[in-house]
Length: 104
Image (cartoon, rainbow, N blue to C red):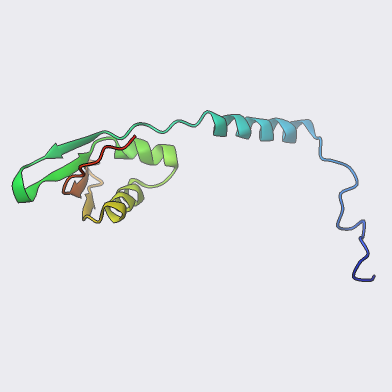
């Protein structure tokens, strides 16, 4: 075989039209279009140097993103340049400091 030749080995002779495959692809496209992430709910706690932001629904956001809550809160901390803490027992997500900008 020469460099410019096309072989039937690399080409599909007929399109894949199996009904179950078509349904699964269509279902996945519908799910992607109707994706809704919950709005972030943050509560500022404390005053002065000990001010913290509690991300109340971090676990809900993590479920929507299909990631562990630790990853989500760590990402927020990196983006804000702040320390973070996630407690698995109580499910609390703490970001040290506050952000003056609202998201959304």
